Every structure is written in C-alpha cells, then in structure tokens.
Length: 157
Image (cartoon, rainbow, N blue to C red):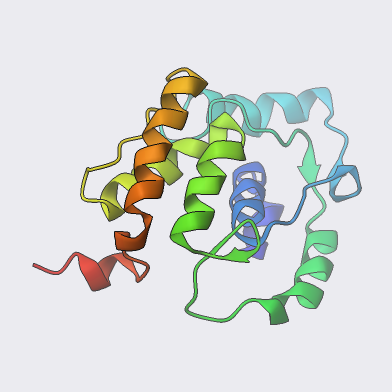
C-alpha cells in the first residue's frame, strides 16, 4: 500500500493508512499544496461518489517519511489482525471511534457496526450528535454479543 502514496490517490491512501495504523498525518509528512495540487486529487475525490467529499490531507504525501515511520512501527502490528487507529480492533474500540472520530471517518465504521449487529444498531452518521449517542447506547448494551472475528467467520450461511 505504501507504493500508492506516490500516486494521485496518495491522499486517500494516506487517510486509509492513518485510520488503520493511527499515524497522524502531521505537517512533516505532507508537502505544502501548490495550486495545481489542489486541482488534482482533491477535486477528483470531491466529485466521486465513492471517495471522501473533503479529504483532511491537503498537499502531497511525503511517502519516504511515511515509509520510514512504517519500518519502525510495523513490528507492533500482527499479520491477520484488524487494527483501528493503531489499536487492536475490539467492539468497544469501534463504538469509541464512532463517538470521537471526525464525521468523515464514521460512515464505514457505522456500516461495520450494523453488519456485525445484524442491523440491530444503525448509527446515522448524518444525524445530530445526541441522536447518534442514543444509538451508540444500544451498541454498548449489545457489545458482549458483537462478533469479533473476520466478516467471513460470522457471515457464513
């Protein structure tokens, strides 16, 4: 995936990498955007129905610096395990993430929660915060029953 950081999709790849590993894409990992940079990836993703509407990262990702960080951090991540924000995935972490992460990162997490609870919990990420908190209360009540395995382990017919 780090190879993608040198392409036009670098902004989206960096967002994904950050969501998994917890790497904060700080200013030392991003080159200032030029006027031509602003027109390329950001415009592409804003007009795409599949990409984020407003990526938080503006400019070009310094792939060499991200790669250097990854070489040091990689040992903390076990192959075959799921991670969210650099922590081993748990139902509790998923619920916490839905409470505190930026709105742009919540829809895929809400979808995962809905799938794992077989539709019992549907967090409306565009609803008012008070409504989302109410929906997450139900998730906290169901937390012990939320499957922790991979999707294919609990979706077999």
